[in-house]
Length: 170
Image 1 (cartoon, rainbow, N blue to C red):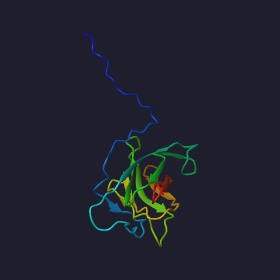
Image 2 (image 1 turned 90 degrees about the horizontal axis):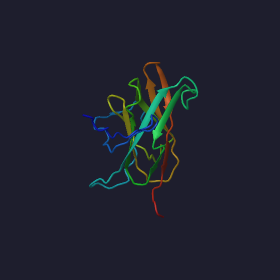
Image 3 (image 1 turned 120 degrees about the vertical axis):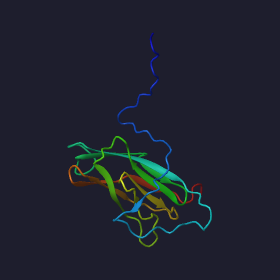
Image 4 (image 1 turned 45 degrees about the vertical axis):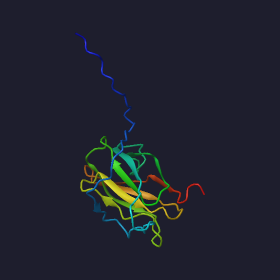
């Protein structure tokens, strides 16, 4: 008796699958944090959006895009575009990323006078980091995710793209 072949979807090794997921509830403040962003909303029910960004990091030895070319990182989506106020951006390590890689912080060029980003919150296992983008002012903000490679005792800086549009449609 022959069995029917299973219908499995073939994914390339570079394709990262993103399912709708909720941000981690257990988070700790980053040691690299600064003062929180001012919320752009009044008190009341929160209508927030969460953007999940899958982050894959690997040691490649040569030809990479981080850590003097010895590490490769990919973010999916490659650019985060924020259009709603108080948007949560959740960076999460992919299952393909080795356990030796963990988030240890986040650096940003956000303004100290009118900050748009909250202090980063890191999950206890270091596999996700979240920030809240107030999206009150159109501004260019550079973000650098700090990743620790515990197997090589080195730090890798990954710089995903973040853009924002406070008043879409104007």
